[in-house]
Image (cartoon, rainbow over all chains, first blue to last red; front, side, top):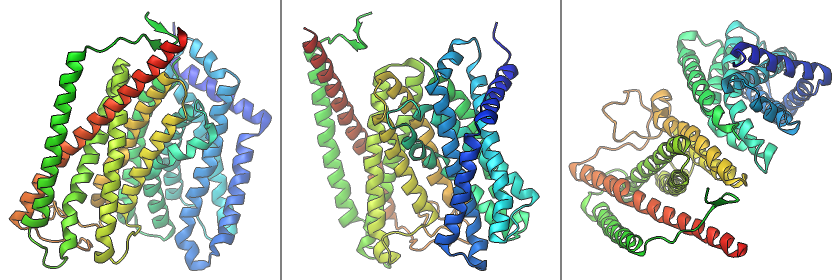
Length: 225
Length: 256
């Protein structure tokens, strides 16, 4: 009776990708924001060589997080404004599949922004931030942030304050994740051996799994009616 | 269904049951006040003065007790949130709301006493220590909960979203509890678990507890956990119910 999970998931991702390819709204805005944010940080912090080494991971993550919030608001607002969500709820499809589809779409867009940001900061700050571990931590951090972001954005787009409420509701919940991600990134950039920061990667992984489970379970409730 | 536009028809409460409950709450509140005064007395007169820190160390009893009070009221909000999602009975959401508001008050007492203690001991009101930061984030998360709640007009959706956010927000409480384990560079002392904590601790302002101090701490903890917190929550629930009843009566009156 129900459409299979993976088919629903891929249809939603395909729909989001198609809309994005035709309008170039989301990734374009996020990238532009990321570029501006990196520039503003470099002026505001007046980073010299030593300060850069310490501050760059914070700059990177703050930029990714705020860019991602922009994207999440757009992505969930779109579903709401065009009555898409109602249509999906009427269809005989499982709720976790909707979550998975929206989440993976958001993850994809944020990952694109994050991955483009790495060479950008490498050039602008003259520090090589690209490495294998860096990509792993970037992936884990963005994964957790998008999981919670998708759930909370689904709630906040249904409130009066809408866009304004997402960062307020999301940032405190995502904080443990950010702490672990920033710590791990700083360690990687300063060439600290894995044994010394490996716990942060483990903590990140555990938080990711816990948030994934909680958010998939809770999603069913935030989209009913 | 007896609901008109989502508003259930008002049924006057049985006077007897309500009154006896009020008397019970009044008695409970008087007992709470007495015990609280007693614990203050123990704190100020019975527990000895700390050799190194002097009088300001006495704040520690309230500091810890208010944190655990907050812990239990936020915890009650999680259980109430889960129960609300299962049963959809509005009273569970009222319990969650009461838990979070009382928890916020207690968390504020916790932050304020900590800050006052830190001024002479650490020579600063506030520092961006991992523990302090996580406690501040915990506080702000629950403020965000109230903002989220206020942003939603539809009462059923408000209860639903509030329950979910209340469950998610508890993560920051757990985070505050475990952070001294995963970030040993905190300067926040771990008085209760001194034997458990690692030897390389950088805690500033830790102290040894005498048996009188331990007794005072246990008594204060018990008073805050079993009396202060539940009494405040009970009053808050009654206030919410009264507001709800007023709302219903207004709607009923306007309809006639």
